[in-house]
Length: 620
Image 1 (cartoon, rainbow, N blue to C red):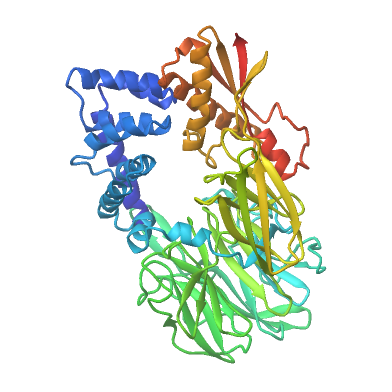
Image 2 (image 1 turned 180 degrees about the vertical axis):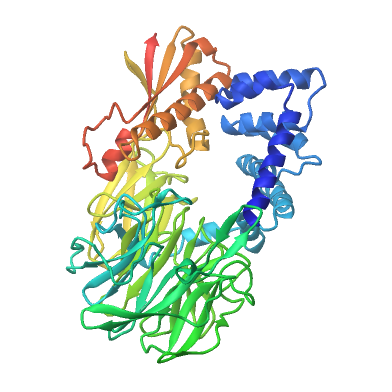
């Protein structure tokens, strides 16, 4: 029913836009081609002849939002916001007000956003704690992660270790039929052996448990004789017919399997499954007396909740909801109970997080929920966290790289770090400088912005080599290295100021940064491009070709399209500042012209060098 409702909403929105925009076809075409300056010029014609409506004002606001012109964006968002039902408009309006330094007005727009989208995660987060993101990002890292060579090109998740074996769910079996939801093969349960040094044997299917339906993930008893795992109700012939969609709707069920010799036999259905709701993602306490799971059964707080049930051999108690402290009106799933049964880890999109599902800890004694921080969590889905206190390692599942992958989790022994960034010539503290903290492989593990005193405060792993890279507009990058072998480290990084460099062939600026997977101009990018604008105004005959490059991660086609959008946004920004369109063109090169030809073995630093914008001089 929820799917049908969403479809109805989308169709209604499409109809509304087509009616509202029927006289703006030319402007809309330019807008959809990312030519925001020309699109704005066309929309402005409606303003000039007093025929603009909320749709035109909204499109103008979006044009200026995308080329990062906060003053103009705010002007038209203010008009469009009157009697507007589009929640997203208020969100973007708030972002542009923040860019103007008008925090109070931005907060008012976020309040409007929350009124129009009360169930939206961003709205809930804002109302509960407007500074939640900063607070999460400033938390010291408790764990470090790295992608496990257990992962395939398809979905892999739910890894958990028992002895030397690691069990997980995967869609890698391409001989299986595809599942319509994501066009990947149905999930099977797999097992691989771990050598303790980060390497895994080739994963093999657990044929005793797998069927032609989805299986996984699983949990196991301490003695290794019992498994609980998820599968589908269709195995039992249980489903509900949905007449509007002419479909059969099944649920996730929990099963128990006991070991007989080297085989898993006697697979039985748990008694508290029901064809009207799902029961999945089990986690068994070490003493075998409590089974935690996720379910959308009646009696919860909303969506999917975390539940528990007592276990006594083959008998089970009545499922119990863990309550409002852990469960929200959103979804909570993938519970994992710690070895000492004191802490429950879980994933949630209803608690305050960085985006999608975040992983949290829940202290069963104090009932306190804690976000695990930005090392574990990203702006994507992060879930299925498991950790062995005996082996001091664990696993995380995340789609931060596009597909569900499995990551190794290591606890961090941390020491304090205070880094100060100063002007090399004057000794002045530099506020607003970016400081990247990297490990010995040059992988960025944390990024910060210096405060008013030019300082950042962080933590680093004990007895490991680290390096710092500091960057700031109008300065050359600076670096420092150290080994975290004392209780606290103090590091000073001095930056040399630079001027715009104009060679015979190009104008050299500081790197133009874009947000991940986005093409709109950021405040940092606007500041750098303003320097190019000034160069072009000082040299009225100069013609520039803006070339945008990506690193080698992602597909060739995706990188070409992303770099082309970024190049177009760059060109649109330059034109918006009064430079004639004939003097600036843009071209996205994707990963075809790397600055460092490092192939598939690029370091994070080499990836950063390849991910760049260049401004070639066509005519001086």
